[in-house]
Image 1: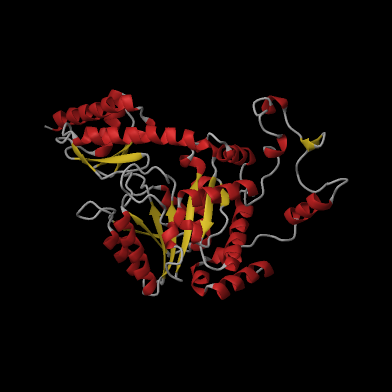
Image 2 (image 1 turned 90 degrees about the horizontal axis):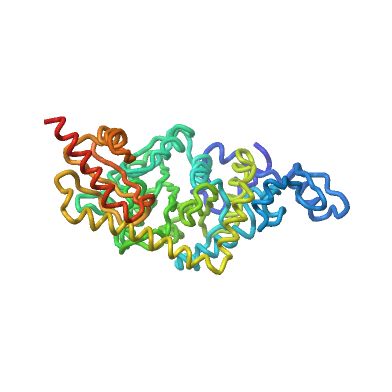
Length: 434
């Protein structure tokens, strides 16, 4: 084991032995090199005033070399802010701006101890870092039965973890905190669990209400009280898109200081929040009372980043930073929020009208990009294919009965026609089966 890795392990074990027990074997071995190309280049950048022949970029006329055919389209930005390598942790200014934004949008965070957000290549990369740092073969990853399919690839296929499922909704069609609690307590023999909390939920668009949020926290605390070390991951991909009386903050703030055996990890990003999907800018943030422990986790995270992508894309980080600093940012974001809320509300009005009750019900939704129909008479995959072939309508089939609709990408003026076409598809298939 490298001496730096051993030192980081000692720090984590000293500050919170429960967190040390959460680490994967890879996490215990990983470290961010303090000696080598990056550190020597950083030292040279500060001291080499005459010639800096350290880092692998090309310079011309005192700035990063670039092609005019590219720069002509990016002339609003200085070459130093788009062509150079970004630091492995991300642009410092962007990290500071995102932290400021987190506190502004989640006031409960202001009094909590949490790390500076580290830039990731969007949320999938952030979740992959979580998997690398905390998931070993046989570890349990707890997610609801209605989930984003990439969790299985990230935690199970890549890292060998076992996926544990519980029903997302209870009999009252609220969040099933009792099911979550049962799933956590079932891991007592293992002594460890990774719990992924994704709100607004993909695929259902559901965010629990404040009381349900308290029940989730109680379920996690019950597991910790039972001696289970819990990595509590908030996948906040769709954070901020809360259209009704649900929780308006991430559970991350409430997870801080919940229990010494609970390590809160927040994965979020500009991807959906700022409508820049292709920019691939996300963040990973840890919470703990110990600044030394947070620093050690940051160094191990940087080790993972260095060993995989080296660093994230610089131009997109600059673009996001520019947006966050713009005086027009909040007004423009509110404008897009209102559009999204209008689409969600129109979907709900339409479904509540009773017009389609013969064909489907729907799972509660109040936020995010999606909602799910629960088909009553036809198979979801059969309907999906029929809609594509006969009506040119694309949907996502999930199991036998569930059909996911991304209202986020449908203009409000087209929503009525969309559901009319889906209903026509159901009726077509019903005739065939009679």
